[in-house]
Amino acid sequence: MIANSNIDNFLYDFEHSCQKVQKKTFIKGETITSYITKRNQLCILLSGSADLVRYDLNGNKTIVEHFSKNNIFGEVFYTITTNNELLVEAKENCDVLFFIYDDINKKCQKNCKFHQTLTQYLPELILNKVIDLNMRIELLTKRSIRDKLLSYFSILSTRKLSTSFELPHSLTDLADYLSIDRSAMMRELKLLKEDGFVTKTGNRITLNYK
Amino acid sequence: MIANSNIDNFLYDFEHSCQKVQKKTFIKGETITSYITKRNQLCILLSGSADLVRYDLNGNKTIVEHFSKNNIFGEVFYTITTNNELLVEAKENCDVLFFIYDDINKKCQKNCKFHQTLTQYLPELILNKVIDLNMRIELLTKRSIRDKLLSYFSILSTRKLSTSFELPHSLTDLADYLSIDRSAMMRELKLLKEDGFVTKTGNRITLNYK
DNA sequence: AATAATTTGTTGCTTTTGCAACAGAAAAAC
DNA sequence: GTTTTTCTGTTGCAAAAGCAACAAATTATT
Image 1: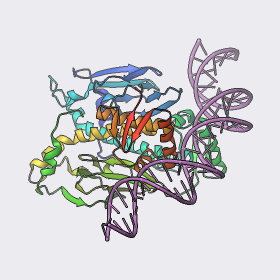
Image 2 (image 1 turned 90 degrees about the vertical axis):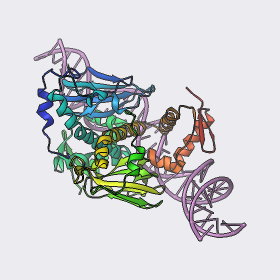
Image 3 (image 1 turned 135 degrees about the horizontal axis):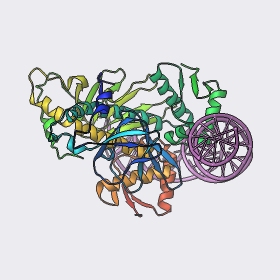
Image 4 (image 1 turned 60 degrees about the vertical axis):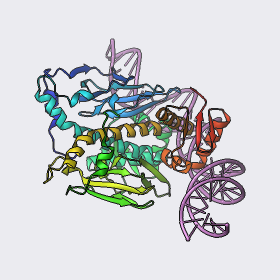
């Protein structure tokens, strides 16, 4: 994170004053939005968590992106191709702000404080997104399942400042996130344990290497 | 592209007035920068083309990102991990602007026009970067070499508004970009030709499907 | 508390991908 | 214009990953 902002509560506490912004609530499992046309929609996840997912013709699910609090998403970040439908699915109950990217730099009628704050924080939110995407590409470009797992663990370890950490998602989701077959991933995870690289107790991974 | 900006020539014509910005020239093959420490460096490629590359312990090269005119890059977009050195290599002669991200929102002493324009266009440049990265993730999450190739061709086809287009890079580079083995890619490309999906004449690909 | 649904863990077999090594073509350098 | 380097194209073999199918464990739901 670059700046020490306190965007957290400001956005959340916003009352429905700004005409250009909509706030909606979703329950677990609901589809928040689908990237179909180029409406330049931009969304901010205020609470909960959600996944951007794609299902291919073979029935494979890919978790294209995982969103948690204050992450931004929307069609504005995509060139929509007809080939693949992209859906944002709520993993938990979610509060989401919706607005149109092109409206951001236009002042809204009331010149409201919310709009100002949004404009102020957006660069930081987008920068965080770029950092996340680059981290993701780092994982996906790893050549083997082993390297993908080790890189993923290494990132979690760095984030928690500890060699021991909880896996934030299910192993099924992890396979869909790394874009690999689940059973193959389980096999590799077993080998990593046997080779002494990692220890797994329940949901907790401990790294045994530097 | 979201806005109809004409950033192209403005940035290029900037004379060395702004204290906070440096312009440097590189010849083909030179290393433009290396992501080692978190200096929050941000760069704009004014002319030429460059690759962000990573070499792993097995000698595999990965083209993490490809940059052409007006693309931005730099450490500011990364959480640097000690595991992998990331290098930006000039593929052609390049002109590059360097500055520190944190300085952007500070007004420079002279309150120069360049600085103003930069601040104005940066959101658009970053947005374009996010779009590129998402496109990249789309490719990398494809499960097979065949799907990676077809998706890549599909993107080029959409860009050129034609089912026929030139490959912008060598096949060797394409394999490094898709993070796959070159010989395996060549084999798959051959099969795609044999199966009638694509025609290849020299550097030109023609898609024979809708 | 009982049932349903999801997740974890495992394995045999098949397919895909990677590796190594090479020859010819094309491009770049001298 | 010749030499050197890089790129393309190919192949046999080895290794890795995917697929299918299932049982046990865990977590949700009613």
